[in-house]
Structures are given as structure tokens and as C-alpha cells.
Length: 416
Image (cartoon, rainbow, N blue to C red; front, side, top):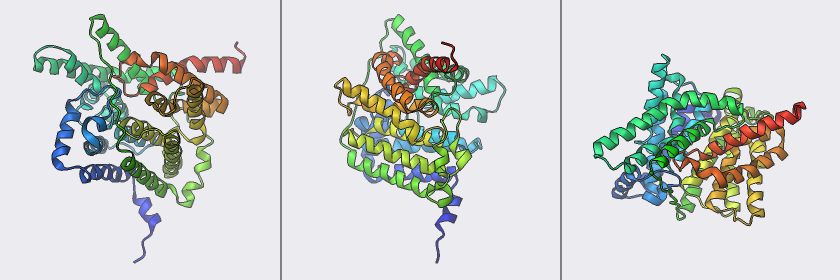
């Protein structure tokens, strides 16, 4: 019996590819953990504070974390299927963000209030929810807000639950118009636009809470003991992506991807099909290698940022427009005598790739400088969102893009 691998690959649509990935992740979690510990771990994930940095692997172990990531991602995939969402790079990106951040802040319970809020907004606008489903998925970057407010308020538990959920729904309702506005502000040079919008919202929320003497205490739960199994998991996913994109007609298009700046919206999947999987796999190799070279930990937070880079390999990021940014962050940390494997530096190095379009449009030197500035801004204003916004690098990148783009354009056009 002859097995045609190319025929097999052609049959794998986006839904099938990610169904395989999510089931694989969940199966590993179930296989390596006793059932009793899985249930206890899932309970801990649902009930714990989820603000940055809350590594679910530290809270509940690796098995429950992988199972939560699988369930949460499968639910979003089902939501897309029900709404007949078109297969795009944006869809792929959002699925990888869901998978990654379901290991550090998102769970299959706390994602729903903001999604419901976006759904209400679509009805207010008298439009189909399918037009807003992508931003609904990305809105879950503020998922920790409901559990955080629930723990802060000292009221009857049912009243507190109602208030916390209502606030989260309201946040979901205001994200779409704000994200539309912030996109105009940075002109598509920040790939994490919803993270920028959510950062502005969370600053407002934190300011209101502080005004009433309510303080959100920071979290730093960081696991270090699961490196080997996570390395196996990540390498397996990278190999799978490479196999999807290794066909000659796919990798022959890869050089075309490298020619794009990556500015929003540059959908590599719509333009080049499975070649985007090859790009995603190569990005995975590069940035996993970076983590290992600096002796960084593999855990919930680092995987979330790594999967974020891989996901955006379908819409905006490629090796040439991302590496200068990470080098800029690393250089700034090095001259400041800060170890490159500390949590802040490691996550900022990966998260700075939100500014890939700046590097892609204006060159590696400007990208390098943007990476340097990204770390400096993260150090001094990264705390403003109080840990509620899981896409905090998107917030910093948005501010930096709003500052840099007018200056770059001004000098380029001779306005200054």
C-alpha cells in the first residue's frame, strides 16, 4: 500500500491541523499525570489568581496545565467552527496565542466574560458575531480581571461574582472600538494591537482601583522543573509544522515571505498557504534555540511567548524582521549587567517581536534600536497594567510604535 504524504498534507485544513495539535497536547497532560492530580490541578487553575506572572505549571503541575491548554484551545476552535470562521493566518495566530497563554493566565472558565462582551457589542452594532470573533478571542488577554476583582471585593460571594463578571463583560464590549482606534495610532506597526488596547483599558481600571485604595498585588510564580518534557513537546510541534510546509511548492515560496515587512495585516497563510507553516516552524527553531542558548527556563510564560511568535509566523513575523529586535533587548540587558535568562529579560526578548513590522519596514538597525527601547520601557512602565493584561508586551510595543513611527516618517520625508 503506497501512502502519498503530499496528498495527506493537502487534506489537512487549519481546523484539522490544530485539532491534532490540541489533542496531542491534552493527551500528553493526561498520560503523564494521575487522574486524581489532574482534577486537583484543574481546580487550582480555575480558582487561583491568574495575573502576570502566574505560571499554571507552578500552581498545578504540568499535566493539568497541558490539559487546560488543550481544553481551552479546543473550545475556541469549536467556537470558530460553529461560526464558520474563514481559515486565515489571523485565525491560526489566535489559536496559538490561546494555546500558549492557557498555560499562564487563561483557562476554560475565565475566557468567556470578555467573549460575551464582544458578542454583545456585535449585537449593538447589528452585525454578525463572526465579524468580531477574532477580536473576541484576543480579548481574553484580560481574562484575569474577573477572578482578580472577585478576590478583591469583600462582599457577598454571589454579589461579588456578579460584579466581577459584569465588569469583564463590559471590558469585552469596549475592546473592539478601542482596538480599531489604537490600530490607527500605530498604523499597523505593532502586531499585538489588542494587547495595546487592553493595556490602556487596564491602566484605567488599575487607576480607579488605586483611587479607592484597592491595590492589586503582583504575582511571580515561575516553574523550573519541566524543561525536558516541554522540550520534547515543543520539538514535536515544530517538526509537525515543518512537515506541513516542507513540500517543494511550499518551501519555494518561503523567500517571498521574507520580503514582507509584516505590517498589519500581512496574512502569510492567505498569500502563501502551507508555506506559512514552514515559516512558523523555522521561527520556532530560532527562538527555542535562543531560549536554550541563554539557559532560559521552559515553563508556562516562556512557552506562551514562544507560541506567540510561532503563531504570528502565519501573519506578520519571519526570521529577518524578528531577530534584530531580540538582539536589541539582549544587548541592552548585557550592557546593564543583567542576566539574559532572568524572567523579565527572557520574556521581553521574545515579546519585543511585536514590533517586527518596524524592523521589516525600516531595516535591522532601526529594529535593533526598537528592541533596546522596548526593554527600557518595559522596565519602567511595564507594571502599569497591574498584571491584568496578559499581552503586556503588546501594550509596551504600542506605546513605542506611536512614538517611533512619526519620528521615523518625519526624518524620512524631511518634515524635521
